[in-house]
Amino acid sequence: MSARSESIWNRNFICAIIANFLLAMAHTSVNTLASTYAAFLGAEAVLVGALTSIFFGVSVAFRPVAGPLTTRLNNRTLMIVVYILGVLVHVGYTLFNGVAPFLLFRILNGIQYSIIGSLTMKTASDSLPASKAASGIGVYTISNSAANALGPSAGVIARDLGTRAWGDLFGFRCVFIFAGVMMILALLPVFLLTDPGRPKKLAGSVWYKEMFSPHALAPALSLMLLMMSYSLFSAYMVPYAAQKGIPGISTFFLVHAMCLVGTRPLFGRLADKYGLMKVTLPGALLFTIPLVIIARGDTLAVMLLAGVLAAVTHGAVYPTLQAMCMKAEPPEKSGVASNTIYLGIDLGYFLGPLLGSVVYSQTSYGTMYASSVIPCFLAAVILIFFWPRIRRRHELVAAGRSLSEKI
Image (cartoon, rainbow, N blue to C red; front, side, top):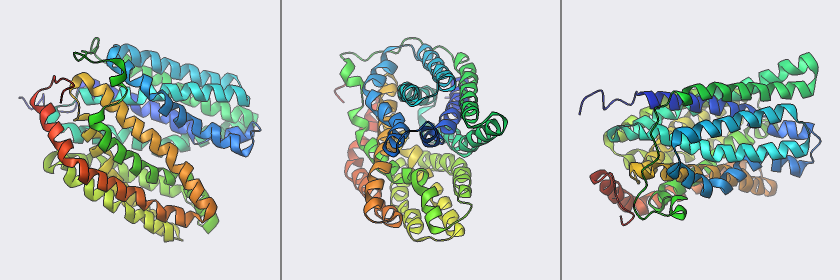
């Protein structure tokens, strides 16, 4: 095999990275201000929470439909349609204000996200050589890290500029316009994708077996548990810092995201060289350290240290667990594997803040962060218990790239 064919840098991979970055910029700029906008519309506290979290709740609920769509329809055509849906959703956000319209478009946005996130990853993964799956996914996830660093700030800047010009409502409309422009720009790399044609369907496969991959469930469950803990950073760091009187906590997110840009591809390469488990298991266990530091920290310097350590450990587990899932299925079912990954991620983001709110309402934010080490240990236990089966599945898939459901 030539060095060129072993390179991750090909047309579809580059287009998928660019499209995913622009998609994530749109989502993070809006999601960061979703609760603020809901409160501005006059929603009560409980409804504000519902409007904020329904994005991920709808995404989880729609996953059983998203999986079969990615395995049965032309992926390039489906991506174009769903990215156009994203444009229309943000046009709706812009033109219609009110709690009911916002709820409707949040639901549509969640449906769009449930399809497009896993589909874009599938496109990137399908273009990677098997020997560089982990490192390629590590590079791919840089687009999410960069968007997580830039998107929230871009949304706030757009809102502030609009508010100063024409008032609060126009400020929020500027956020939605910015996100819509990101979605329009994302269509350009999507149109440049090479057409893969209609996905090759495995013999004997039926639609309900394409909702999720049973062979990818163990790493996806570990990913869900780790994302439950990780989601607490974005969900509660700001009020936690305010309660402790720590100024400038926004720096935490910037430092953390910048470190993720470097750590995710690094650990992906290490996993390709030394093995997935040798990177993933230590990462899952060591992810408990920044959580404990945050639980006890009371200065910005300590929080920034925790942000760096969280980036290092999260960078070790995020791309490697995704690679475990993708390697569990042959190319014909990469969409199902990708859908399984995002099912775990969405459930983690949905359950983490929800269960975290129960803990801190009864105790404190510090106790909440300290208790979030439990999912990390559970994730490690699952990996240890199921690793022999996961490794055997990877070996079987690698031995024959068009395998039946009997494996």
